[in-house]
Length: 226
Image (tube, rainbow, N blue to C red; front, side):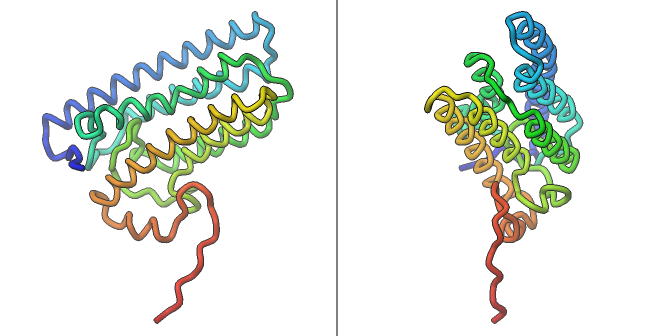
């Protein structure tokens, strides 16, 4: 697959416009989240139930605004090379969670401390990533600080944890878990595309992958010295 390199000024401009557009749309999502909060309370949701959706939307809006101050990309997400998959599927993966939760309605017994811990993990991840953040799967620079010392994709791990925490309290048969599977699959796809670009364009990323787990921080066996 041929990636869109950032050395072409016209492609850099087009990519920047795309990122800015997505950032503005996600910022609007924050306002939508506030509206959902009020509407959910009117419809009988408790604050703990509202907490499942609104912080997510607000967090994503803030992350997108943060993403407007990105460092220069070495490889952009490509529409032509993936038939739109590198752009559409990550956006779907990001916003599928709040849509599904709202459609299913309130659930009982949501563990607020668990959600708080997940959002703190996500905030730690984005702060550690700094200007290397990408709204779409792109290659910028190698991040190895904070939670990136533990796993290569701590933000995606946090999003997957949100899916699992919600489904564990949905109590609606297998349906929620099918959505969980789809949501996690979309993040795995995004991670796969990112890593393919990072291995090509970012020096040291291949060695980083050998030392650091992808999603789950399992201990890796030490290689014997020859």
